[in-house]
Length: 249
Image (cartoon, rainbow, N blue to C red; front, side):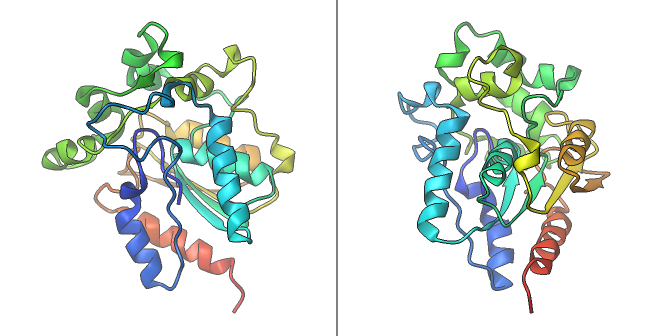
């Protein structure tokens, strides 16, 4: 289970409990420099880390396990899963509101508004960056009950500004870090979108699904925080059913 921007392994707690109760062994890694206190000073290395650094770290962990996992991922983690699948390191993938790879246009007005405070900060591409509460509420948490928004936001940590640059401004990235060769992705995929998602709009998730000829499922009354919004159990349950279908009797 791979987390997205500003999050950590904590965001998978409920899904992990459901999957482990069904007999799955769940590995929930922390991406590099994401394991410090969310409210403390960020790791000085974080701002310059690339998607490629994240993908390499995950690839090393998969190699250490010794077999290809089924990956269930959220947001930025969805792009990392695409990168891992292109390396032949995923048996199957469940992508929840996945960030799009380079070449798939996924920027609309709501996405610009979601990242505006970061994108207008000078030299954000070499700094740790963090959303404000208002920005997080607009882009990520608006389907949560109001009393839960502060609780979840309080656990968000900083993210690499370079990674934000590589995903949102991939046309300007000379290293093409967010590039994924679709022809190299051979594992089955389920892509899940929320119709009210502002950070990864449903139309962008549909484009990701078409790129890989993946199965696509869209939930009408959901937004970006698919792993914790009211009704998350239905989404996780469908993902679990798809995963069980990949395992022979």
